[in-house]
Length: 274
Image (tube, rainbow, N blue to C red; front, side, top):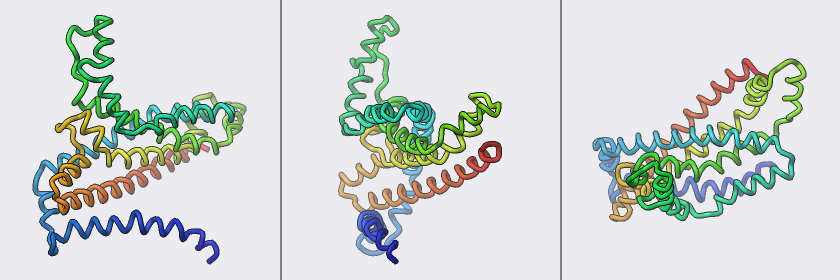
């Protein structure tokens, strides 16, 4: 029981800021003012909402995968550095997180705009005679979202890597493994849980993005967060709550699927690793 009391503050926060708002979201979506399933029927009957749901899922998976591809080597490089240098590099990684997402998105508009830095550079070096359209494309959304979420993945992955004893890699080399074999069969299985956690966090945060897709992607690249914002602006609270509840359920389902798939991959890695 003494240990249980240590858990009480976290439980109270969970009830107040997660479970309570989720129940209120459910109430608002089902009572308008009487009980109804009209909003959920509308969500599934109109193809545009399902298309946006699938687009949100696709964008989030691609962004999380890009964060893993680019972030894992960065985290690995930081983990190999001396302790003091690690702290300095982590400080540099944290600097973008201190800046508002809105400000960073506007910065990408300056870079990718018709008269932006990138188009001016291409014209200066003679690679483009006319401005190239970078804004309001899927690529602009992917690049900006990866740049915003990459520090989150790196920090989650690097914190797990620092717990790994690097002497295991040296022992593998002494026993005849190449550098690649030591990395794949020793370090990768031990760091996989941290990488999976970073992947899931990046995916979960991506599912709720609406500022970046709205400003850089336009209507054609709208995500579910943009639809919720659109409904809230028109005071359609019940349908906005139904969209939010659908987003919550879809995100939880995908997290469960990703965790299950991650465990299968982890067991396969362990079958051929240390």
